[in-house]
Image (cartoon, rainbow, N blue to C red; front, side, top):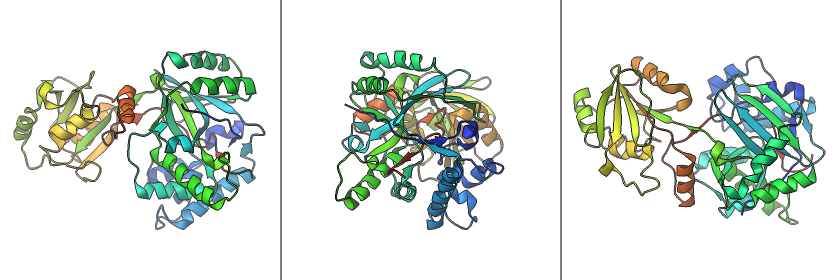
Amino acid sequence: MASVKSFKALRPKKEEVALIASPPYDILNRVEAKDLVRNNPLSFLHVIKAEIDLPDNIGPYDDKVYEKSKENLDSLTGGGHLIKESTPSLYLYAQKTIDHIQNGLVCLTSVGEYDKDFIKKHENTRKAKEEDRTRHINTLNAQAGPVFLAFRDNKEVQEIHNIYDMIKKREPLYGFESDDGVHHTLWKVDEAEEINRIQEIIKRTDCLYIADGHHRAKAASLVREMKKRENPAHTGSEEYNYFLSVVFPHTELKILAYNRVVKDLNGLSKEEFLKRVNEKFLVGRVEGRYEPEERHHSGLYINGEWFHLQARKDSFPEGDVVRSIDASILQENLLAPVLAIENPRESDRIDFVGGVKGPGELERLVNSKEFVAAFALYPTSMVELMNVADAGLNMPPKSTWFEPKLKSGLFIHQLSEE
């Protein structure tokens, strides 16, 4: 069973929401973030990536960065740009692109349920990033970025869609279009009866799944332990026992491909390389640009040409929930044995390109001579991700790119009353 909780959000004034809302902290580097906020002092990037306001010789994990984050949050609050709700609420958050709509519930979820694995993970967290987000939450005494969650959209929870349809007939709290062309609309849900109804529906789910935000969830758990030790009157109901989340039905989420580009062919000629690839894949040249249209099919771009790669049936264990994912098949049957890229997380001979940039970006990178070849993958599905999490296993590295991304700064969860 999973649960959601309403809360008193700290959120932007309506007329400034488009200026304050920002991309997540971890999809931009320092230079990109600086450029994005150059003429926008209200951007929430000043809070979640405060190194952009400090000299370049100050590292992202320096004490000054966390202090600056706190200073910038206090400035937004003290300047009246952020307002505190007087009553606990939930929020419906709809994101719309040209061909896609997804509806998420902005809420709090339980750290205790995360610790007990009722909120399931699909990747390991890294200590440096755990410590970074823990220090950020602890310094701000607030969670500034949401964890992206999903639930299985089955017959037990179908009623949630009817409730969302009713909510969307009301006047929205916010409505704006971000620079990436995504339209964001949010509605406030503050009536106790409606909140209880939504909570009861979510309780019918066996669990929630982390789609994105493993380090934020882990940091919330670590902060809870710290604050629990410091609080002799701990009851389990304090705000630090929960973390900021947006929860979606899995059927509405869109995963794009997470493509690969490599810098060399491990000493092989193009002909030798294609011959080795053919051992595990059926290889065929295609005319024009190629994008995979089904599982176990991928694309290869090299020397101005596209090739279609189809994994041979005996080249992977179809019943294995991890090794049957296309990112695993490419890694185990090509990147490791042919190109000697054993650990894609650590190798400097490989890079990753979010599918939102399309195959044209793969062509550009290879044609620029920065990379010698590119691989276009078929997107992982939410069902594959949930099956991996249910098995208590990890997804292959860099195998999911969720789009659109959740904006930061729309809602902040304070861990104690100010």
